[in-house]
Image (cartoon, rainbow over all chains, first blue to last red):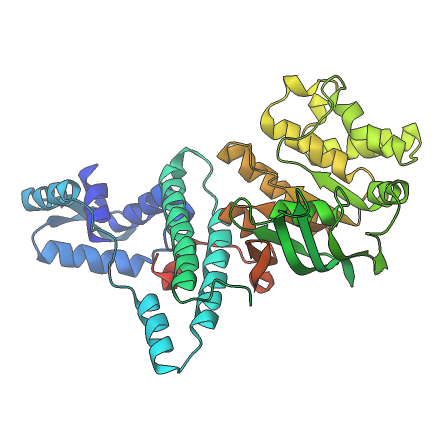
Length: 172
Length: 244
């Protein structure tokens, strides 16, 4: 959550509650519900690291609020985040490790593991289809859903491949 | 209750001495209210299976049962009557009659099955409203978008309130937006109780099913039940455990 928060602060100084709202507006249903506490804790950490700075603002009738803004170090960190290539997909995978070792130890049926995983992926794919992604504000949600769906489709194909290589692709 | 069932069904084409085997002994049953997706690479036999279930073709061996009654041995005429009343069919390329309006395309099978013109019209209007194509009634298929054509085809398939809807790659010739819309409609009818079998190679389409049957080389290789979570509304947050 660190870098998205920095990015939202790059739009201008703001306080915690507004950041929470901005998050929801941009990420829509595709982002976990964020609780305010999470945001405040992250903001405090970012301030301690010198990436943002907070200023107390007095409010009539209400407790003071802290308005945060990006420091030059924060801007540099954000720029570094934008410029760095995203991590390459995993090579090691817990599930396939389990399947291979299930076969080696004979402690579980690899075919049953694959079948169970297939059901899990297909259910996830259906849940993704139900994530609302309409409206302009939810471009990000639509892109996240599309990305996650494509990954799951690849994982499903890969399960077929696992099945073939384990010699279970024949008729039951 | 089993609506439609194939028992040990095989199908080959071509010359007797060098047949092309499309299905090699498939058992497959559809329960009332189920949405079943049949998946597999092209040439795996999934469309052949659907054709046999729908009576569009006959098995080389094995049996087909509709409501527990054996139908693969019925005469062409008898089968045609059963098919009209009990089976709705949706094709990848719509198969609408080009010189009839959308309304006539939909009403025609109803009239052939014996509905009065008034009843056929009433059902047609209701279906077109439900499918959100009410304004397209007087257009010929060429004037409709792909998604609209498939919705007309869906209305046509449902006009006789079939016990089972068979859909062969219903989203296969649609863009992703139209495909998603057609899937929403199929899911909606399914939620209202429509028993449905759909053949697809699209995993997103298949994920809507209660059960996914995978085929390869003319045989069923796996069946995955998904029904339990059917009504879950997803947020990605709930998927965090998947680490996608």
